[in-house]
Each structure stands twice: as C-alpha cells, then as structure tokens.
Length: 196
Image (cartoon, rainbow, N blue to C red; front, side, top):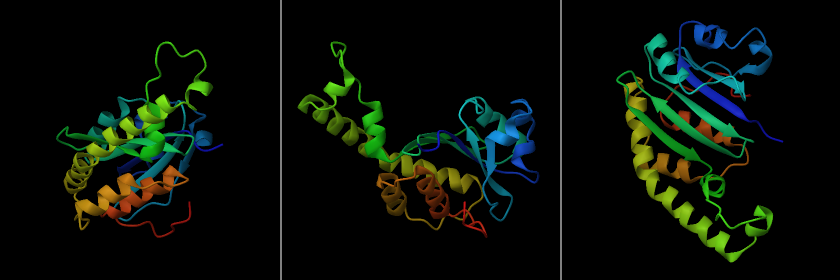
C-alpha cells in the first residue's frame, strides 16, 4: 500500500513543521509528518499523512512565508493533484500520473450496480480514453502555469515548457518521485541528500 496524504513544498527560514498552521494539527503531528531533505535557499518538503492538511492552509502558508508554495494531494502513491499558489494569489494545478488520474476521475453511470464489473466493459474503456484525452489537452496550460509559478517563486526557470509537459505526461510507480522530479525540472535547487 502506498502513501496517501500531502506533500507540502514551501520556503521558510524555520522548519515548516513548526509553522503555526501545522501546530494546530495537534501534538501527534511529528509522528505523522516526514521532512524530506531540505533544498538550498530554505526550500522544504513535508510529507503529511492523510487528514492533517486542509485546503485553506495553502494561502495561509504563502502569506506566512511570503513565498510561493505548492501542495500535492497524493492517493496511494499512484496519483496526485498538485496545486501551486504564488504571493499574488495566482494558482495553478496539474495532475501527476495522468492514466491513474483519468481512471480516478471517470464518472460511473448512474445505472451501474457493480463498479468492479463496469471497469471491465468497453464502455468504461471508452470513458477512460475520453477522460485521459481531456486531461492530456490541459497539460500545456498546466505546464505554463507551473513555469509562471516557479518564476514567481524566484527560481531561474531553465526548464523548457516541453520538458515540463513531458513530466506531466509521465507515468511513475511512485508519484512522489514524479513530484520531486517536477520541482527539479522547474529549477528549484536539488537537495544535497536525494535519498528520501
């Protein structure tokens, strides 16, 4: 079973784990949070177990740190929705592992009694193909949003949009690795210790 929870990426002079908004999650937080190796410039990633992160924490984190931040909502290490926010309130989103995202987002018909049977039908296959194509069509705008966000974060983006699009279309066993690769490609300095 993979990881389900949130990957929070932000810049701070202090440990993100000590941020007031996370302190409100309670004293058990330390056992449910894992700090990834820091990146130069104060960039940090926290891996938080399901149920700790709230949607309204992202704007609060950006306001508190005075820097752009993003969060990946991860499901079973197989799919993630990344949401980035900069200090001007501009937001971007992108799915990681599009095939898994498409399978997650396909709407089942109201007359389906047994989902396990429906996913083996040609109708499901066609619905999945349409949803995957829909997500794929959003990739260029998602990549552009990610690059604008990285630039607003003060990173000298050396990445080409085509490379970001390639990453957003990539499939990895562990979506956490794809999230980390996306940050690398967007130009954030790499952590000295890449072992997670």
